Length: 474
Image 1 (cartoon, rainbow, N blue to C red):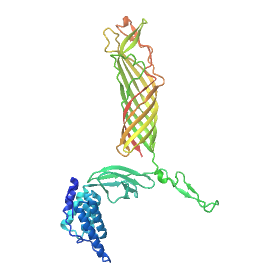
Image 2: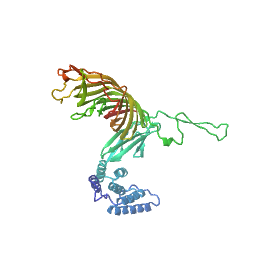
Image 3: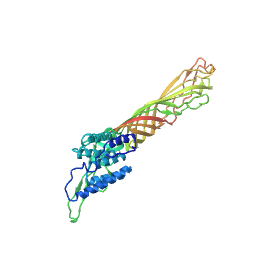
Image 4: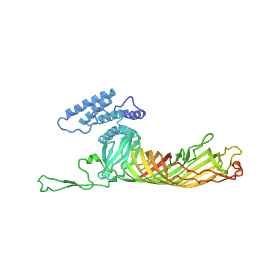
């Protein structure tokens, strides 16, 4: 069998090396049994002419033109030589699946004439070709469902054997009337068989058309009355299958950050005062219901965030009526339970983009701790931590964006940023007087206090980078 002299790639070279091992006999010597119909001699002569043109084009490495001549010759007269030469051209054109089909056709059509080394060489080439293509097996769908591979129908389920495909990306789509279509994208390597489980979901809403008999309004009168839930005939293709509503569950773990809680803590923070970002932890569960790109539901979780301000200046009052400035270390923390509702929009298939808006309440406590600054100079007022807390109730509005990838048909992993705006109702207050017992008080006073004030601002934002996992219940 004629082959090639310049392989395109290492794998192609190996296949073509196996192809040149086949040295077919002259045209027609291994032809299938010839019918005795009139005009057979002329058809045989035309087949020989096209075959010889193919040989000439093959020697010039004009593979596509040579293939056309060999295929024309085969359509006039089926010969082993024409079949194997056409297959060799297909290998050069990297159309490996068609080459396999031709070689297998030769093994079947000329099984009685192929003996010994010739048959062994063809089997070797077919084996090598199988390593250059892959296969996709499809199971799990409803019997009778149609399989489309890269948009081309390939049969109905169950399939007799896996579908052979060129290596690379492919799209499998399985459809059946009354079911939601299944679609899956995958990559197939050479020599690999990938199994796909295609589970079709039955559509929950169906409809029928009822054709009424002629009425007295006229002999040609007809009424077409859609049953409840059915659409019009004209738009049934445009609308496509209805999307199946689904339940969903999601868990988000976040690391909330806060610039400032407000209140009186940030005031008086001048050098060498330190006012870093506050941080904490949050765990929130979302449950909801999705239809098409929209979803909505409820959420519940826990939030804890804390911020420390070191070395700020605060005013303190003594029993003698005087006031003094001292440096203090303040720590403020908010902890509580979150309850709310949300609505979201999603788009994308493999890379998923989500936008969500949540609203609800935070119910917990605000705790504050104050102590004399560690960097205070000798002789300054010194006191241990003064603890206080107040019940906290906040209303929040939380916009959020996320980007995720689908790990499986129902499982998604996403990264996002949520920015809840907390609104205090009312602002949590501190005690009006916090007594400070000291052995060396201000001007030797026995006690002093800090003026009371709210522990937080009326509203402040949190910034919550989050990692979330989601599961859809189809």
